[in-house]
Length: 361
Image (cartoon, rainbow, N blue to C red):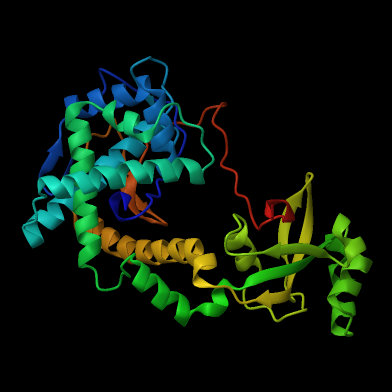
């Protein structure tokens, strides 16, 4: 996995631009350094290569678009790339120091394929249409940059393999996990009620009085499914919406709306969303294999993320202040863009809460 997890780089838009003249000391972790000149060359390559910008954006929420100069990155992109490089340095240094690990040619080949696959998957997950393939994007990197990324990927893969809290992504292990969590992969049929907030009290009263899911949807929902008693469809583990539907249903009992709704934005207005499971149908492993794999990857990522954070908490980090600031976010240690005065064209971050029925497609 890419740096143990799909990297969570929180991007803050800044007004600065980082190009040929702004980097001097670069970044370092535990004495392993990327020089300012090397970092400058790498950022220039990203700024001038749309494929690199796109695939790297898939790995994080940062924007890698060029800054004011053609060979420069904006503040958020520069900080995000410095963050990736620091994580790679810290993890590579850790496995070398603690396990005396140095990848073989075959391990580097595996790491290359793994990195290419992860870049591709990250783009697909974020619905990005990148120019060219991930193989071409990787090949577009300067030689030192490409070698560093593959070395970091190899170190990450090796470290994950050493964790006793991860589950091997083999068919046998996946089947064992599936058999122990069968009910988590049922095909789910759901009904919804999209309710105007001013009517949630009346909804709760009718629900407490014993009204059925269908009756509640017909009486209170503003969604077109109300004519069907709120019936919204069935979702198998093979559905792209399965994870969202399963999360919305949670542990809610059959044919029961939850007492507490989600609040969602729909057509510019806020509504209360209630989702009820109306039928659960067991599935086979072959039907659920994709969902099982996704769940195991997430579980392994959570375990690996803990280790990654511990490594970074203990790392001795130095960074050119022109590039960013090393600090602590809600997701762990990371590089923030340099502090800059607010400007009129800085957009506020948007937080999307809840899940609207429109995602169930």
